[in-house]
Image 1 (cartoon, rainbow over the protein chains, first blue to last red):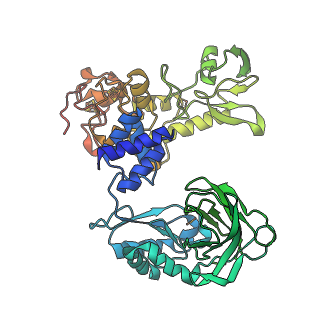
Image 2 (image 1 turned 45 degrees about the vertical axis):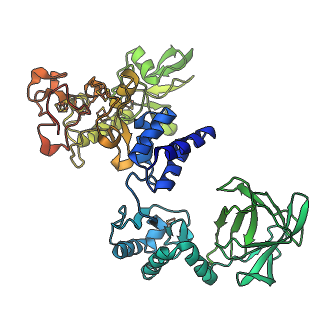
Image 3 (image 1 turned 135 degrees about the horizontal axis):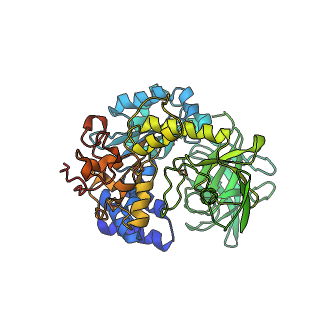
Length: 282
Length: 225
Ligand code: SF4
Ligand code: SF4
Ligand code: SF4
Ligand code: FES
Ligand code: FES
């Protein structure tokens, strides 16, 4: 841990008027845990007492005061996942990794933890590894998940998505399909919309693979530009109801044919998205 | 001024007065445990429950934290209040039977046994010590850590606090363990009332550890390791 790094994190958040939790979150994402010296620095720099900082850091389960591994596996033990056999999944993780929940493998590669509901109960049993969600996990799949994680999940998930995560979407107003089979991206039909930005107006195609962020467009769009998305059939704006969890730009929403809504961030280059499936099509 | 009735007696109090203060003003006794004059109300022990209203809509609130409101009908000793109070005392006895204060409160309310699993907690999380340390001693050396079942009191990282001024205030107010400072000689006690009980840090098998947060302990001069 470097004091200057921590101090710069703290100062940046203080300039933005952020609270204690965002500071701790960023420190944790940098070091995978909250080093004691960092907590001391936070207390000193923000004028809080060490007791308060320590109290907050120990209150939330997502903060860890012990060093964690490179990869974090969270197995959901919430009620819905539990009745669908989450404990067998957790046991299998324990067996494969050789550590109990709350522990880290000696080689500092994996940390295992159990959590109480990830808010995706319909997909249970759910496990989250390095921010990637795995649904309907069976013990037999655990080994593969761990192997994929070692290989790098960003690639592995792309492969897995080819198999089971193609989003078939339609306009929320006219309900006509936005899928464009004539112009496949990533090997499957793309999603076609009309994009408007900075007085330019043209088509835009998105990959329908969940987890892929490939975009093609008629005109180049600079990163960070906010784009308005329209239905190519009824020309209604595909306006989302919420704001991007990553950058707080307005969201664009589309109906998922299998039941549910997918929202994506309207900022070019931002990967923020919300997938809310209420059907059991997945 | 706010007018309300307590046990049928009308009383007018200033805005911001708690129900506990209003009742005490009229002379109605309400037992308290986590309340102390000079410290902010906290509402941890629930011993000071009173009943608001009558009939099916009546509800129990902790009087030490509830501000007086116009027209409230408060009862400090209804059957429901007494029942709740006794239950709370039983629960307190179940978790911390060695506390002189809890014993006295229980016997004052004719609670002589409890029906739960007997434990010997060295802390009932009343928060008195934390408030004492912060509000009167201006030290903020100790605080709450963790949550739920694992909630506990102590210094950050359980190491000697740079903020602690070794005043002993936390020990002095602690209902679970004022006997902490008796060691084996009652005449060394801050509170001599517990000489009939064994000091927690000597009877180690029953307690996790010495329970005061002072290091070194200036009250009893035991070397801690
Ligand atoms: S002895 Fe230390 S911890 Fe206890 S009240 Fe005094 S300053 Fe606070
Ligand atoms: S240590 Fe004593 S005063 Fe502090 S919270 Fe626990 S019981 Fe209350
Ligand atoms: S060490 Fe602390 S708890 Fe033990 S007798 Fe001394 S003051 Fe009391
Ligand atoms: S119970 Fe596992 S996601 Fe809700
Ligand atoms: S005295 Fe009111 S809750 Fe403890």
